[in-house]
Length: 518
Image (cartoon, rainbow, N blue to C red; front, side, top):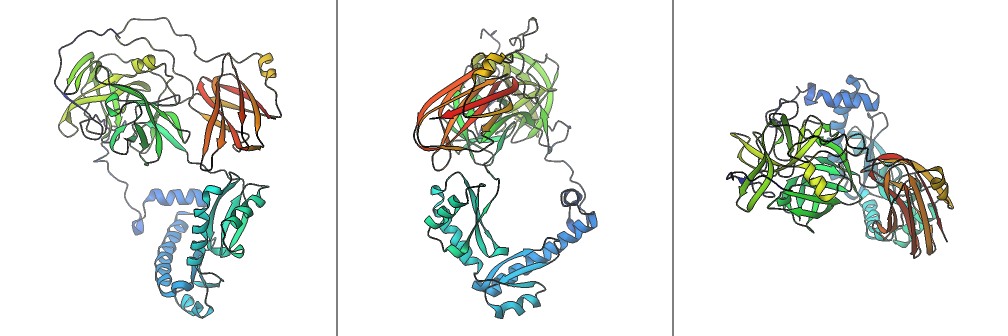
């Protein structure tokens, strides 16, 4: 981009996890560090907790308070009995009404001790330590579990370890248990329509870590990942989320000169068109129309939360110790280390990602951000918005009016194209940019090996991925992007468990998937 030269301003760049990054007050105008907390209810229980229990357990507030009091008593009683019973302790559980504490004992002679403590004794064959040992054996064999085994857990009311299998896959659950070498009588197989997987949202402002070391903040979700500051990482650097779960990889980065980067996330993370307001909620991102000088602007970052101010100047050049960065926007918003890369919003419109600044959020300061539209245009990215629609193209930074952009969402494919997608199995759904759906029905299918063919017709731009279960996770083995509303995929594959994944790239609309395996 051709930028006007400006006088360099000496400031410090917000290096990942160490140098100063920017922050902003909450969008409600509160400082998270000084925000007043709600008064506690009786017995130290917050009113919000009582309200949530009342809502979700269908209790009155008095019933919720009594239940919590009983649970506190039960916790102390269980801790005491577990110590006294030793190997004969078989576990404990509250009854459905939340008032009765049941304690399992492997030795009938210990029943009187349980009764004296105010609990109800339950005679069992195995102590909880034995059940834990059985589960440990299953854990050690976990890599051999097929995708139709959803998981396993210690179930103290039945004095067994339960293996959860998909409906119709009970035999697979039994084979897994037998192969692990655990005693047959200690394991029970039950079926449930469960397909658990970790689901994590990518939200502007949230913290992420680079190579398990430095910390920065997410800027904005884009299809396939998010944008952030370039000084936070280099291509190939790996990221983990605030929960320390593997998140993605830096796919592109520019610093100095510019200060932007693109992180591609893995299938466990879903980019969302929102920004964390660090006040218990999120605010929507509905586009990236550039705000003028003098407009209010708010920043969200993982160190100082949300802070607001005004735009002071554009096309600013900053002479960081690491080098000069041009084309930044100057604001009077404060920031601190770790806020780097975070999101800047004017209303519901994305403005940029935090670069660096001077000062802090105690004394105040100046902060600069890299305009988001330049990042999107330079990397051919699509901003994920709250409604799932791609953001319209914005005019280049620096001004000038342009005609209203045409919609970027592709038209619904003609009926002839949709009819061309035929196969042994067919499914339909609705997809939007930044979202993904697993078919068939969130599950998987098995093939004995050979050619697999699939076709998807969609009223949005999508990618179709064929994924194979590798023993620990599903991995993509083939992919096709849609062209003119249609994507076709053919792959030669070995025997195994597979699934299809429809990924929204741009727009939103209905899709029809059909696939076959020979």
